[in-house]
Image (cartoon, rainbow, N blue to C red; front, side):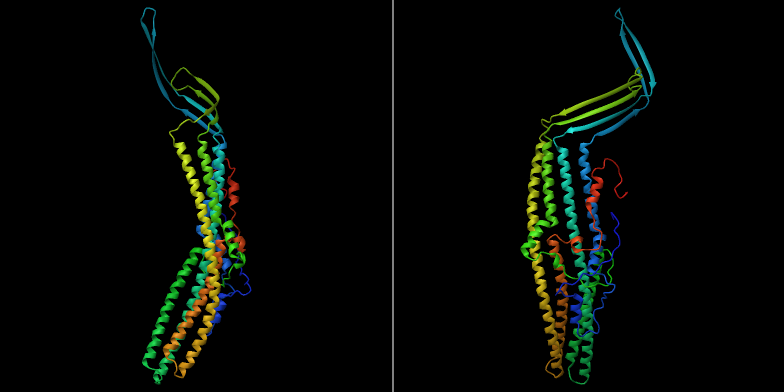
Length: 487
């Protein structure tokens, strides 16, 4: 991890007036159960605590934070264009020279002389180059890098929303599957008792062998449903561990987060377009593409630089007579580009097309956010209505089952009718659990769609990661290979 977070404990959020507790609904539905669902609240994991753990531990989110820190380095790299470049050079070695010269004489002849020897030439020099003007490319690259940093932060914020939504979904999935598994197990207990009673009645001649077979078939189907529920529960446990980073314990009830979302659909759409991090990232990407056009156009402008150099040489290479030399210079260079094969013009055209593409992508992102908000709003409204419908379904199914059992005792109903009514009640109870799950998940989906699913809004007890801290630490760094955390 980038920076260690302090330990903390999650707290259970206070229920809104009228909001239903998932476990309470399940417990009320289990009228034939001997005890309520065994999910304790004293030392239970809470949804808020799970979200805080996911915010701290999720590897996908930590990887995105590392990517954001890497993007921060684009700014000091761009600012390097304002700074001088200094090089120190040194050379040395051994050389062997032999030189023969020809000198004419007065009588038309020539005199030949040969000089040879060994020496060890050595030189050391320093060169400093400072760019004074490069067509505003350094300034535009710096602004482009700053826009990249902002886009990366918006992408990080979007990743936070995704991770928190996945964590809330994983938590509620596990809670739902645990409740369904308990319902199916209790259903098997009821079916076992039903089979025992049917066999007793068969032994005294009140029912036929067909009734016993129907009870046995229902019990086998119930056991199959238990196995399916166990598989779903194990899968949800694995997903919980993957997303949140720890093994699940006893889970407390989850509650909706409607209080953080806009109260009307038009307000939700406007908030989503204005605050969703994916829209912000797309806007900053437009700025990045716009600056790239300016950088490409800067290649057509003159370049001005100044270079100073100092060099000291001893026993210069290539000669045996120079013992020592010194050279210092300060030169300015002006370069006016005229034509470089046409590539610079192609780069400008390409950058403009990329800019047009990013602007269209911004429109696409806004449309996607609008669609996500409307969809999440509709799902939330449907989930609210579905809770009332499924609760009414449970009440009706309970009344129907009790009536069918009484009628079966006096011979007006068959065993098959009782088993059918029992399965209808189980299905209704499962529907209530699923509706409560969908209600909570839909509220988190809407909050993510409007761009407000973050630790600050939710009030999570976890230190908030601040990407600007690393940016400020590296922005004006002139040298050094260690990261701010010491690596």
